[in-house]
Length: 141
Image (cartoon, rainbow, N blue to C red; front, side):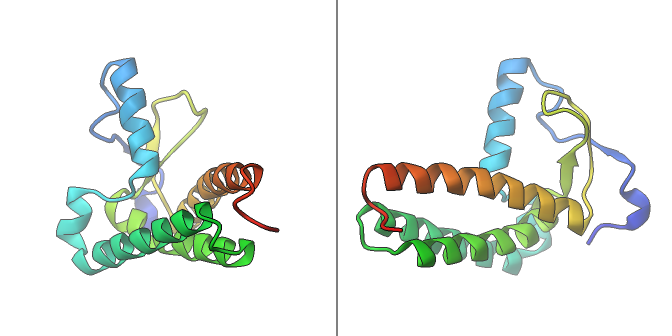
């Protein structure tokens, strides 16, 4: 985990100093892909379990898109993935943005920082996917 003394120290991801367009693309990828090479070298088991669970959750979303998955099961899988993603991110990308979303300041993340980040991000992504499937008539509430 992260040393509490380091929580106020700035962190700079590799993409943070790049050109605006390239940085925004890299930041979008950073939000959607929680794994990193450094994470795999530090904690292979956590990263591998996270990758396996991500495949399972993707399969659940595909089944929901085919109309084969109920809303409750879909939400349960998404919450489970979110809990696992916190562990994956803490070992692979242990930082969060500090300040406004358009800023370039990052800092080391505590467990609570990462819980809040992942919960909010996955709430938005899950709601978008869920509402899209509901509008298409694929998920019955």
